[in-house]
Structures are given as structure tokens and as C-alpha cells.
Length: 87
Image (cartoon, rainbow, N blue to C red; front, side):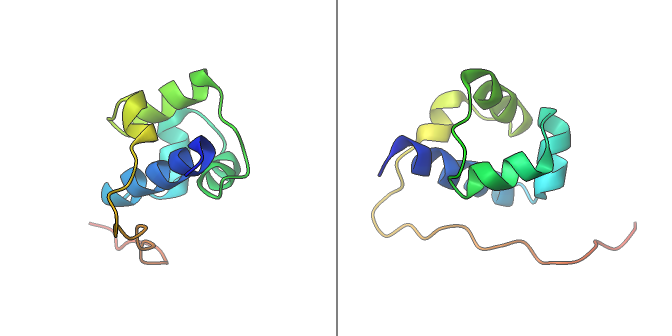
């Protein structure tokens, strides 16, 4: 698997695992939401500075963004669509 695909998969895996929307991750990382979407689809090559911002926002390390999936590991499922109920 290419590095770009690994980063895309792991950003999505970490984001979905924490229940974050792309918008919430973008705000936390200080980047545009459409850029997060393009990163997760493997359409962009992030700079080291962007990788660092994402790692901090995801409470992960930069090497976590390059983790190779275990054989048979499925991609993360999408989050439930729509607005969350107010507490």
C-alpha cells in the first residue's frame, strides 16, 4: 500500500474511531474541511506540518498515520449521517 493511501486510511480510521466529523477534525487541526475530505480520499499529499496538526488533533503520533493495516482489517464504517441531538 502506498504511503498516501496509508495516510488517507489512517486519518479516517482515527477520526471515525473518535466519533469526529470531518468538520470537527478540520477545526481542531486548523485546516479546511474540504482538505480533510481530499486527504481521506487520497487526493492530496499533506505536508509534514499538516501531518503534525492532524496527529495533535487526533491525539495520535505521526507514525500512527503511517500504520499498515493488519491483513483482513476492514476500512472504517462511515459515521451516522445527520445532526447529533443536543444534550
